[in-house]
Amino acid sequence: MKKLFLLASVTLLLTSCGSNDRGELVGVSGKKWHPEKPYGMSLVPGGAFIMGKSDDDMAGVLNAPTRTVTVRSFYMDETEITNSEYRQFVEWVKDSIIRTRLAIYAEELGEVPGNGGIGEYAFKDADTSNLSEYEKYMLFNYDNMDESSYSSRQLNKDVDLVWDTSRYPDEYYSEVMDSMYLPVEESYNGRRTVDVNKLKYKYNWMDIRAAAKAKGKGSRRDFIRTEETLVYPDTAVWIKDFNYSYNEPMHNDYFWSEAYSDYPVVGVTWQQAKAFCAWRTKYKNDFQKERGKQFVNQFRLPTEAEWEYAARGGIESGTYPWGGPYILNDRGCFMANFKPLRGDYAADQALYTVEAKSYDPNDYNLYNMAGNVSEWTNSSYDPNSYEYVSTMNPNTYDNDNKRKVIRGGSWKDVAYFLQVSTRDYEYQDSARSYIGFRTVQDYMGTDVTQN
Image (cartoon, rainbow, N blue to C red; front, top):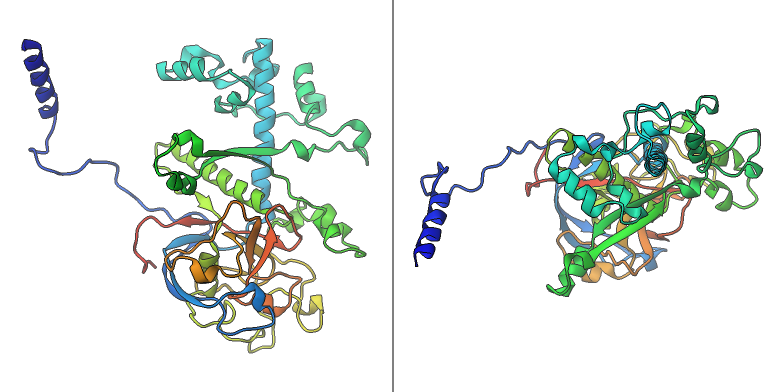
């Protein structure tokens, strides 16, 4: 009885000491929230709109009856993701793979920083004397169980990678770097090329929909999905999409030449676009973590409804992002990059794509929501989806449906596909010379009238 009384007294003491709330319900105090507009994005204020076409047309099979829906506020990239931005993703993946291989090899050899060789690239936690007790616990209990567990180790990025073969620090470094390139017999023009099939990005995501359907059955780990995706775009799409056409210069130069840095990336599948979103979220939150700041919401592909709402730019009944039903302005100039007239690709002053920030933006400050490249959305394609989706933030995502909605039309399409209400689709594992993407991020809050 004494022990029970003593325990109750200690509990009462612990709960009553060190508190300034005077016994009132004041909530848990935390850091003050400071909303931050994501770089390169514009806020699309939420609201309602009539989604879809107002009448039947020649491609009615792709469309569904109109419906009034409402979407919440979100941020959207002002332009399509450019070659330069996507190259940052590819370079990060390549850099991380090389550093991981160097660190693993250094650990196998017992090499550590200070010898001037591969040891300079050892994992930062190789020296356990500088680790906290928690870091030691995680290292000894969760790491080195298998090769994949190295992903949790901290790479040493303070030391630059050496690309000049005459300056490789030792033979072990040479061996790792050689493993990243195509074999010598597959090289030409005197240059060895990085094997892009080794550039893969691996990430996890939570299948919330599956967890919700399970209704509490199963553990959390049952709904964690792991994806591993090749990140390098298919540059051969310029050849494959157009048989008997001389597009070799685009195949050779479009992705890597600085001349095309500000042009939209193409040759990217839906899965690669999703991987880019996961990486962009990680990249930003790694920065936030280093500075003790709150994590940001995930970057993702827009839903079909979000894309159409954003493309309309607040003009409820507009045919195109600029409003009216015409594709020429009052000076007789084309308003977007597409295939006008009777197939004269160059009539709009562009044969292929144009820079991502071309033509006038719509009223949400979004560029090229019509033409240039079609854009992946997160939604699965169903011709009857408008009939059954929710009227609030509608989305038809279905992991088993491999057809994904693309919107906006492209440089090779006629004007019909540039209309904000026109639907089209492509298979998620397909890459095209006329499909790119842009990302969105949820707006924190419920206000739909933000400026």
